[in-house]
Length: 361
Ligand code: G6P
Image (tube, rainbow, N blue to C red; front, side, top):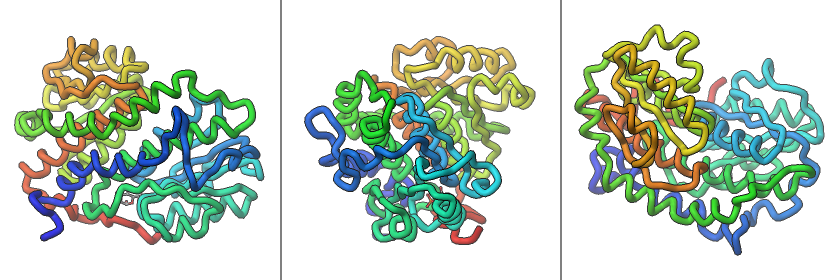
């Protein structure tokens, strides 16, 4: 308990640690307007033709985030739930880079997927928090997210550090992979990344998440929607919420809401709409659809964003590059889940039936 310091739970401590953990993730990795990853020097990936991400749980959502960025860089990418790899992955050969995203580096499903991919000829890379973990040892290369130890079963700071590491990795791959197209605004994006720890601090200092949690804690269901990078954040927001509150929560691609889930929307199901500043038009349109069915809308967005026009409640995030905005929205959602679980008196750091690392398939 001493390790919790001033906080009631490790989860809250770890949420609040994000300015520091993100600074550690970034430190020394941006040099002269470019990405410097000492583990993966320039040229490491010049034989790569396609990238397959494998991961579980929160790490899967971070992998979705990374895959979105890789696709924007013109690199052919798929994201596969590690437990589905044997039956779901596309073709694999020597041009395939399989990227295992795993906080612990010990998740059995993820290790097994990497073993299968390498047996089929792929080259492998572990993106992990734990130095010397099985994933790091078995993969051809490893890059560390440097988030520091995470005790709460529900992953928080490691998601942020995974997403940032994958964004940096995207720049490395875009420079190496033939025919890839590094982001035209790379320098601006990396400049904004340097401000991310401070932006997270701003969210932590000004958040209205606790009030919102108090106002909505009697709801029947909680829905989370977003588009593109916001979609992965919506899924992560819902996973966090269900893991620690035990309430019904689901995340959707904003445009999918009307293809089924809308039947579940009522005035007792708040809809959290995540805006990143890119592709938010669909999120707004579909938030309006939900609002028409009586759902309270919570915009998680910058202050002057069009979503705030339709929302009853606004959780504000600082203005930044769209690549980082989703991570700020995610911090707001982590806090909503935390406060809701606290009001419901759940055992936040050790939710029932869950383990920090699942070492069986
Ligand atoms: C367990 C944890 C999740 C975690 C997942 C993947 O299910 O409860 O919080 O996201 O494993 O863990 P990994 O260590 O591979 O990131």
